Image (cartoon, rainbow, N blue to C red; front, side, top):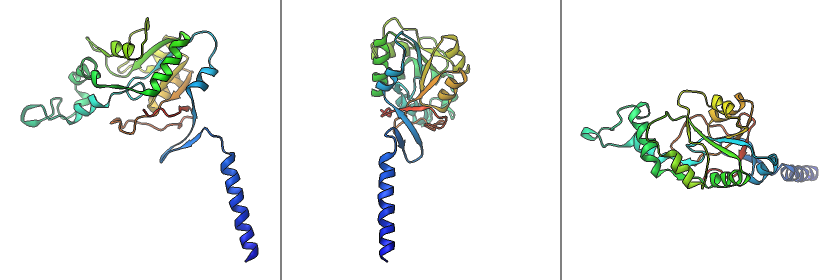
Length: 224
């Protein structure tokens, strides 16, 4: 019995020591395990000269779920039907409305403010690349530039069905931030560094999302 108590005590001490020895950046959630990185650590890793960076929009820099939620759940059509039909996200009019009206209700993410403030201060060129289809009369560029105090930066790129990796390569982007698996994959396909941004827990986006799945670093505390 005495030996058993000693063994249990030793196991407890070893477990405690192992837990304390783990790297602080090693994080877990209910579903994912990944390594995190801070804005300060990203800044320290960059060259002294300005670079070109890219960011996804929805759930990366803007919490744009209000517009998407309305698209899927509204009953403003005839006889309380959805004005965008049975498949709202396949309706061209929704995308026109999203990028010309509903972005007024999109909320900037605090993590995006920190990232963009850092890159803007460095004098980096900043591209926003969204998979939304291009439309006439978009207000997204003006909203992003005003919200994040960006001047003399290029307009938003609406990639639509064209792979984001093509635009990443075309514009010489060296770091790409995004929330979706496809954002990380686009960066890797272009041969550049990817940094994952966490989605807000109240996001209505249920697309493929596995933080750290591809070995990329995840921006710390970037859910909101």
